[in-house]
Image 1 (cartoon, helix red, strand yellow):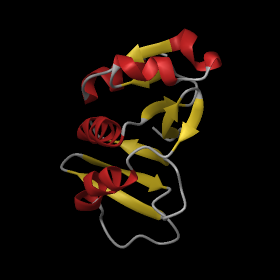
Image 2 (spheres, one colour):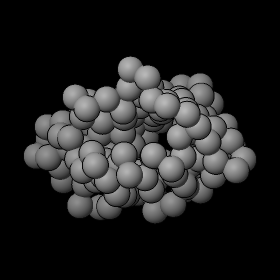
Image 3 (spheres, one colour):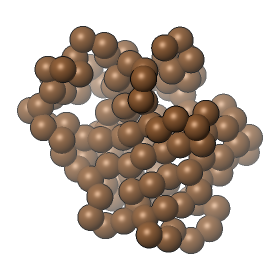
Image 4 (cartoon, helix red, strand yellow):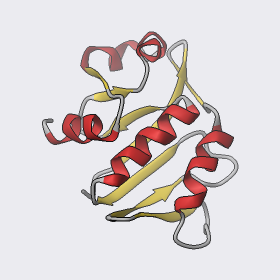
Length: 128
């Protein structure tokens, strides 16, 4: 899938950095090569994706050009580790913990799906 999937922290309705170090720790073993200008490519046994926002001054991440099935679990792993909300463009807002719903801006709350693993995230996006 080539659409953009944003991962962003929220606190009291405002964008927040989340635990960036934890996000990078999950992503780093998946990188297929060096990071350049905050961009990298992550690879799993059955697919890959582009990842943007790996620079030090970025609050969240963007993932696109997703292929394979295992990558969805890695996206959820990053969201859990960093406390990120998953925001796939044109799809429901996906949270990995119900507590996150209370921190979302009001305009994002009506269309929220709780996802606990990569399969649930993939289904939430596929059914949008």
